[in-house]
Length: 106
Image (tube, rainbow, N blue to C red; front, side):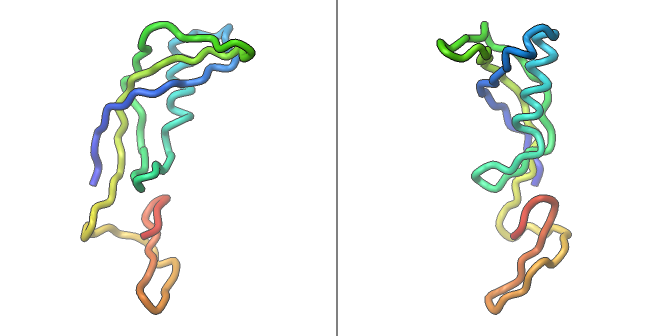
């Protein structure tokens, strides 16, 4: 099932990129960090959208990067128990079969 979730996290902006437009750079790095990734609960982030900067960024002593807190929405594919999905059988064992659907096996 597809769900939309709101999230907050911190994005690291390297010092060599600080000459670019800060808002666009933060949005691009947020998408690169979270989009097309599988999370610990097995959900797959399809899309990151509506990225907002929260406050000012922070620079940590000894690191020239800016750590910027961002708030964003994600469109996620989160498979549920007994959900019917179309996929490709990738392995068959004595106790069952594994089916690949997108980036996930189940």
